[in-house]
Image (cartoon, rainbow, N blue to C red):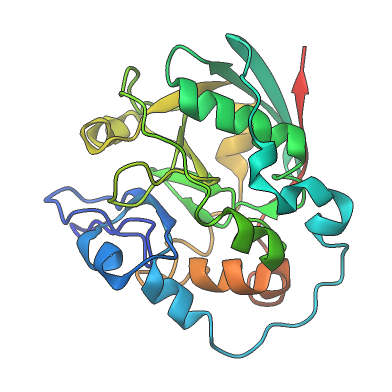
Length: 261
């Protein structure tokens, strides 16, 4: 990948660096100022992305919506439980299972939020919407637009960076604004992502089983729009799984996630 670094904000940009990979940004439904200040990273969607979501309507989803299966997802205030010091979450996907081992002392706010999201069923029937070889795979936008609307501003406070973004470590995506983490998460594919440590990306977990499954997730669409041919975060938030299933049918998905003992 070339030197443009776009966070996951509107187009997933994070400050433009001289490095090659974008950052794992998450889309932020705030102002265009956020979008313009991001470069590529594990970021979130911004106004620009949300604006692009006003494009042609997507087909109606063929499956039950998350809010029907898990009504509590429409109330982010339900995400208030403190996580155990160490816990594991099992993810069942279209490529197999993997296990995330969370250490609360690495990033307490991130560990608590992830714990609540798994327990509430947030990740069930969601897609790995951004998978870039030798970089990372990102997930955590609901397939139900009503749920996305409720969580866009349900952010958590930043955690100090205590671990490095090495291969197999799990981190929340964010915009270039402080305290902007919400629901989007990424798994690092390479040790080269330690460059993200200085950008506030605080790992809270690691893959303890099934990294081969994570490696096998479909990457054929590449980087997300507008920097690549992959899904547009704004349209995912506005149109949900209907948009992804119609336009990006090869994406792998999370069937179910649960806390395991």
